[in-house]
Image (cartoon, rainbow, N blue to C red; front, side, top):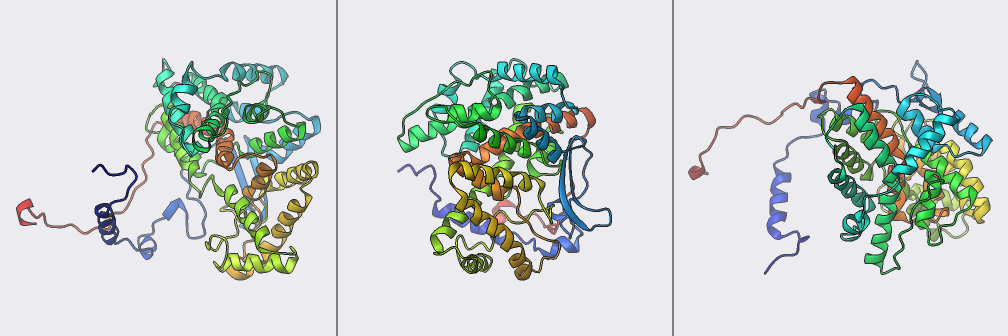
Length: 449
């Protein structure tokens, strides 16, 4: 009898147990051999592995003292960029794309030409949606994105040319179609797995990335100006975050091998899919949903008790984490969270969700002190970008399945900049060293085993 494709057989379990029993690498061995596990030192600081001009994170002063977090794109403070977008009421994501790719802010003529080119690229090959997205719909939209990106290689007449000109063309095309790949993938999943009506709406050339994402996602294609503005700012803030984040570093590593753009971006997607990188905002929303169902009056005392139980592994997923709090680099504040906090406040007023926003605010105020006391963390803990982005996406009525793909729709801009930078500035393959700790063995012939 043919076994189920997904079945873990008794033999596979036996082999897995054998694999685990033969793994003799202990945590203390990393210190013994002075290995920077995860490319980090004992204080959690990233090991310097390269140079970049694309973005910069500031979380400490030169003497090591924690400071309010700052994020820079090509030397420009992101908060100043956002302030100007808000002041003029314009969408900023396309402007940030241009800045990341070309290292300068565009004037009106340059930006209009750039947006016109993106609009021309914002379409998929004939029958691609039917043949590549709808025929094998996945329950995971990041899987759909990765498969679709790799499939686009077959539609490119010049896929392996790694000249800057050709890679830029490929990256701009991928930037343009990422919303289509993600949203159409969701519609396919919704239709074939949830038995819902299927609708595939074409993007409009005059709309921004944020507007088109909402337009092709929603049944009627409608959205309010504030909804589009808030999503646009979210895309701006997620577009890039220092060269060392896992998916951008993956882009550098894979690009250094000389491979094609589609393979490099698919690898970055695989990195972002991981819950330790791109999936945290879903956990934040789920945690708050569980919190609201677990407490009655939402008094500060009840909220404090719930947060303590979270840290003690006594509630929610028993992982001992308050999701959305703390960051690998930032301590006193995450500048992205500062911007999204105001976005969440404005959107909650439009949606009549002020009570939800207040609950988030209370947790953001109480959690750092509780974590500091329970975990003995002295560098400081604050709300990170996932804390408010989850609330924003929920108020925008985005399906959970698209939370991480929305991240990818934004971060493809940063990945593209990093791929081009790697091609321009490095001719060597990235190859870190590993220390072998397995003793040599005497070979035993097959008949004697």
